[in-house]
Length: 114
Length: 110
Image (tube, rainbow over all chains, first blue to last red; front, side, top):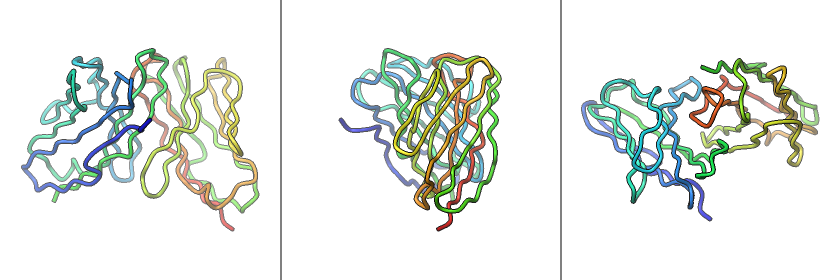
């Protein structure tokens, strides 16, 4: 049973470009969480999604950031017009539909904006 | 919103020492998580516990729900235990995004 997969593992973008980060949850998991870890800072919650629904996006920046978890395929975190301050490690985690909040983390995507 | 506090922030110990990391949170929760982040950056979930104590190898996690406090212990510490240890609680006490402590940077010297 493969774990949570994230790709790419490393992503370099120039200022103004778009970044797309993908997260494939564990098999059978229908809940996905995205977290961000800025350099020298702790992890922060961004968004919580279930299939085709955004449940909680209270941690998402108001502009340029969006997330989706379609019926088929991975969850996508999209950052438009990236700025240097978006450079961070982005982790996703998944949990099973039974709830209980047990979360399994992916290896993360390290975004560098030049 | 749950506030999660961890201590100590940094801890350096000698190989073989017994290690304790503490975590307190402000809002009643269904379960508390302990995570490990190695220098390479990957995150491993060590424990999720809602009551009592759990043990995995040399790692022990305890939680006191009434006092909103949890501890992570490492027995017979080893240099390979060097990592950042993070506790996390559900943000609003239920099944939603986690709120994280700032982490404890642990260094075990040979």
